[in-house]
Image (cartoon, one colour):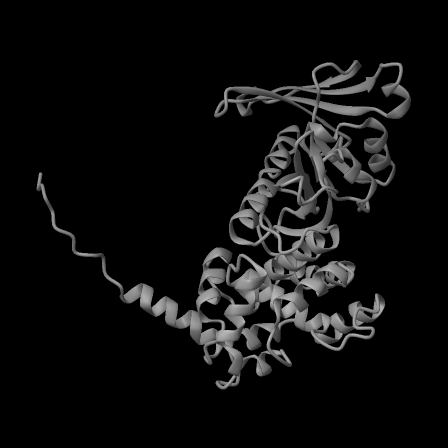
Length: 389
């Protein structure tokens, strides 16, 4: 790459400007816009994510420091925080949601060779939600508790790649199970959920779409055993049964047979009971599929720690959704960068390196090569040994 270009300008090249323009045109995002186009808004918000900015003023001042390098990074003029605030308020958040979907289509194939450790030729998705607390006085639309506001990120990730394929931002009172109405069932794939998604009518819809589910059973549901299969108790399995629901309501909502697997985890000293509509894979594989659900918990922890989604730059629903989707786009950009440059560092380390080098005029591969060289050359600090045993 050109040594005269900043690191920020170089990594933005991994984004298709044409795809972004199509998303903007779909919602007339730049109609009658004189200052700060949607592209410049995206660059400013992406800069905030990459460099851990905390406010609009913080973004304005930080970019002003590098004003001589902004033009070649895609900015036509200096950014004003009031202009960015208006853009976040008025530009349709769906522009950035659609654009993030194009990055998802790029990122997922790059991780297709990742090993799940399962003898399974199918895609495994994990569905869950995470709550972000907000001040109800500032975000009155984000109702949650009597005196507390919050938004929920209903998310489904591809477990193999840790890439989100579905995100819905709602206020905190929306129940988790409502997300099942918005995901597109994929025949032959697995959807792993916790028991908060136990709704037999919705699970039957997945079954009818030939999508497999794995979900922990509640203790109070009524069923009748039709058949039992032998299990290897040395693996922790306790039973593998074919059942039908017998409750007056649930039997109508899910009229087909289900598989009930009981498993005892020695590590956790806890018994689990799973329900699934897959009658073909080994029972122990079903328990391992559910273990993959932990990946979405790690994803939530990562984005909350390393992206700016806990403090928002505006208070309207449009501002919040815009910031969340641009944060997701930045996560995807870093994931794409890792694979296309064949970087060995973790996503967190890559993000840290970029945060301190964005406006250096150094080829991106050289930035990470320099980091590796410094890491290898650095020797352990020589501290005074007080006691020698």
